[in-house]
Length: 517
Ligand code: TNX
Image 1 (tube, rainbow, N blue to C red):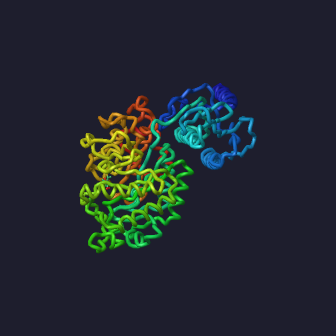
Image 2: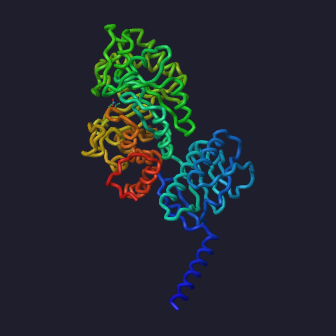
Image 3: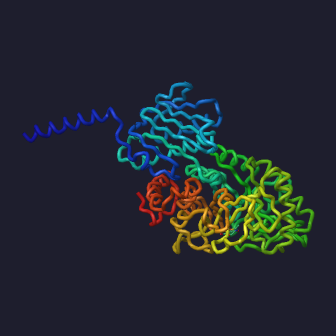
């Protein structure tokens, strides 16, 4: 009898498995519970469920080159995560069993806007532009990867529904200081890949400082022959050739990230002053510098050769930087008298204009006569926020006590500095750019950027340890309107991203502020 009961039981289980085999299993999350970061503007779940097996092809509507590249990359992504090969389909009318990438011009005024529809036998990614489609694909990729990493079964089913989404701010950036320590092309590419997961769209390169000059200037070869040869702590330094730089610009552009080059002027220039004696007022080359103190160097403001130098550098870099901005630094020029600083900046701003770039600079630039189009990067500590801000320029928020990724998380963080205070994960997330600076008209804010200064950052693991997870929070602040953001909700969603970072072999700070899943 007992044997008979057992048999019935197994037959029942077998029949149940057969029946459920016809329908995809329940997804791990419904669409509105998916821990997306950044949180999309609207999520409308349906009762449909799609199994990855139901998708067999990928197609683009229209022969847009960027869409075709995205389709190829998505095919590789799909194979990696589902072990299934998608075929390219040129069927332009039938969505069945396909992932469709499509540009739909009239559905929003926002160029990054997208819609993602998931039905029982098709996935549709529509963008206002190719860039919009790309942002939508990144949402779809999170859906696949997080469902897979948190599913208890080794096949995938995805929740149906529709996402309509667009960013709050046009500029959602990261900055990497490659001057204090140099990072290879391969490291930067990996960083770009990680930033693109979270819809970051600008990468600002701090290409020169007292400790190193990091980009080849063909008309001034000694900048890299001499100025590129060391870094903080006395290591070998390094530099990007113009070919390397072009490769990075292209790699970033394929992921819809715009590179912003910065040459910090007229202070933070010891590496240039060590390379060319004539840039010094006394005509004597400085020694190379490998410490971390700031504010002791300045180009010679009254020599004509200074402006030939500035012109050559800005011209050569602008020629290989398709983005709109050229960042001229301008911070902490502590040994340049204000009147000299302003005179220098007037001429330098004219040079930027001559090379068809929009000037960008640290907020100390406000003392100069800046054109309205200038983008000012505001980095002050909170207590300095009362500084007058011109009404006509755009402001990029990089507040040291909220955005600086080189600030230690807490007292036991071994890397980083703490002059702007500790920056735990909650503090880095739980603020609003609109209310941070009392007198600032929020319409002036173009977005925010998270700088990673590299005095104490020596390799790729150091970069990601300081950036992750804080930069994920900055990415959400830039994308999702503050009225839709709550720390508790974000902390819950972030808890599902640790496995994603681990799967990518990213070293990150697994803070105990988060209950990692
Ligand atoms: C300030 S903020 C700097 C950098 C340092 C950084 C270290 C700003 C525009 N300049 O030169 O690397 O602090 O946190």
